[in-house]
Length: 611
Image 1 (cartoon, rainbow, N blue to C red):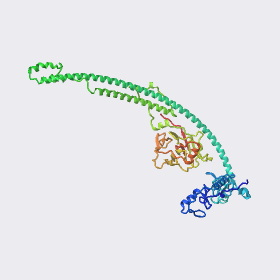
Image 2 (cartoon, helix red, strand yellow):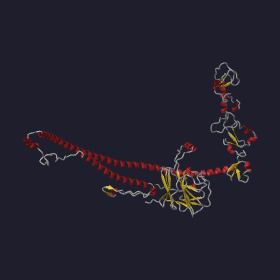
Image 3 (cartoon, rainbow, N blue to C red):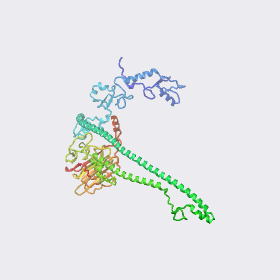
Image 4 (spheres, rainbow, N blue to C red):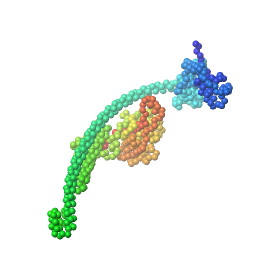
């Protein structure tokens, strides 16, 4: 069977929706429409008539799908979609610019015609000799970016002076005295550079990946050790708590026994007093009867039978000698005595235990990257009145505590340094050089316009502290920046740009110290600092600068917001790669040297842990 040349423009379309037929039906006048289209047309139109020939019908015809016509339409559509290499364009693909209704996928783009063609419309470029000389490439969608906006011609050359692509007319017009080469030449050079840079990046990537694996292994091992130690500590402290609970039971049992003894004694006293009360009632009755007698002799003879105690001081007041052997406040006094004893003992034990725990916590803090505290045997600790004295003395000031517990090892990232700065081999010294060296910025890491540099490592949680000796430089800058800081900044960055800094401009006649916040108080600088300490508390959002020698606070940023919203494109790329995106960016130590004096120097000094 001979092949049929089928074009999408020849496809039969519904005259109402101007699209391919869906469930085609035929009217009595012989015209075809989509069933939904003609039904909707009649629903919105008063007379029932044909939209093409306007023939009116007395009543709405009963429409049936024209199966033969439907099969023909479906076969025609299949011929369009399966004929040769012709396929309908999908989202994200480059469409043919010539197709009018159903857009087909472009097979080639002509740089001369600035047009993308499907296989059918590309045929003249493959047949006509003049069109064969046009430059055809794989389909691209950004043709407007390949055409000169001024002369509307293809960008064929690259100007080294202006670092931009130009057309042939631009070469003869605005760039006549500039060095320009064909785009293909620059493409080959930069592609080769990218390949070399990719190899270097791969080496660094592999090295850092190895470091990551080592750190992960070390962190996992430390986590397991820490969990094991936590379990042991829980057992030890649980034993101590169990002992206290056992002693509590013994103490309560002893108090209950004493309470029972006191109750027994009270019951005996009650029985004795009740007997005495009964005897007193009897005597009172006799005394009342005798007091009513008018017989003098009977009263005097009955007086001895009243049986008053022989030691009564006053016979007319027989109760003047009585002292009750038991008072109602006896139990309350005993209970208050026990509570007072327990309160006193618990207070003393709590004080001693609190001192021990404070000292233990301090030693644990010092053992993590700080000085190793000496352990003292508990049996050798001095005691006073049977209780342990307060042995732990806290650091003398806040700076000493920061130095002991939060100091980190900071090194400079030479790859991020401006070309006018020189980083020492150990990454601890930063100097200014007059003749800057030019190296292409590796993946945008270098500060190209300002003499800045950041540290190799950043922090996204916790606290960290480092010290820098600034006595060798008169114009310097210190602080921290977010990892997303713009490396093309033209001036000192602000907190809104993700930087918090403290800087100095010192001359022979003037000294100016400032922070990069517009609404804060001036720094508290009493004398020219020789060493500056930088402390960051990520969770509290605080950044503080200290004069280490004077041990004074120069300035403190508070209420800083370090979190940031991840851009949609970055979040999408990370999600495609299966990597989580954190809203807590890393903060990197930040350094800068100004003025072109090669003697200017900043030195990252080891933290002095004075005790």
